Image (cartoon, rainbow over all chains, first blue to last red; front, side):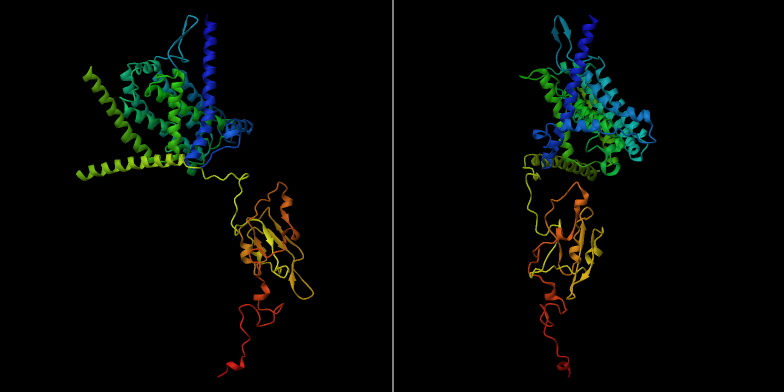
Length: 328
Length: 185
């Protein structure tokens, strides 16, 4: 019987991996097309009709490029860092619930890879581990641009982890569980966005900062740091950083969908499709944001996190707690 | 205290307004027609004075304008123009060979500005790139055209103060020779 369970696990892992990697690849194309249109350009349209073969062309190009390791880089860490970045981004999907349990051949099959009872902690832990990819990659490159980018990245990611986690506390209080599937089940009536707009806003802004994208892209500020922590990377290792960034965007979208938008719940459409639609809202919003805003200054970034987001998040927790106590 | 609260209020208000404006501007752009010109399918008509392929022009009477004065090759910042000077039997200077290496040319147009006889001119024709770099070295027969370029009616010797085709006092914008003795008091 255990072999059947293992087979099922493999099917789920590889199925989800395939979907996420395809989504990440086509999110790159979507970003380039949409960013182009937002800037009154066309975006890539040469590879295939409407440029739909562009991700394949990009992937092929990156695979065929030489994998350069700088002469005095810390080789082991240099090779490890991109895997950490994309690995932590992909591992987040292990706890995303795609739908309610289904019964197949008399077996209860949860539509997620691992129904962890501490799913929220797992997600936050992975997002903290992702900092290592940035910090180690920048440090191991033995280049000043990479190091500066890594230092900025580490400080930014660790700072924004606090409001990210704090904005989830009211959600956990409302759901009464740390399991992601229980949190989604608690939103059967209404999504938590309606009762936690402040928490949603804080989570959204923090996830923008966590994804290291404009207006929070100081770790890879092109004008100052060339490409920041991944300046020295080339070929598929750079591709892994890239993939990790886009997988991270999708992961954040999925988390927003699970925590605030009601996960798989929704009328008419099947649950998986609802989750997909809600998941893609956040990457689209991030792309729109990228087209709209310039980069923040570093002191503004830190000021915004420590002096505005964290106090507001704490107040939000207190207010939610008080409301729950008074209404019983 | 009042002023401080009001300042914070204005800051928040202007921040929100700025955010909304940024998003709405990009959203409006999303529904505009892209301004991209797709090059190989659509070739824009370039302005007459755009700077690309260099030509050597001729005067209205069909003679080469170039007098091999070396001012263009002297002005060239990348030294892509070379030539040799010689004199015809009638004393007129010309270039037996004239060579421009378009692999080095940066199309700055300084040669055109330097040219006293308006011989060397830049044209809007830019589509002559090549993978064989030696084919980008243009000789005199490749450069010479049989028209006057941007100034079809111009003839240097109509204006120059030398007696070549035109006798003294007959050049364009030149007065008759002054009778020096008639100027005396």
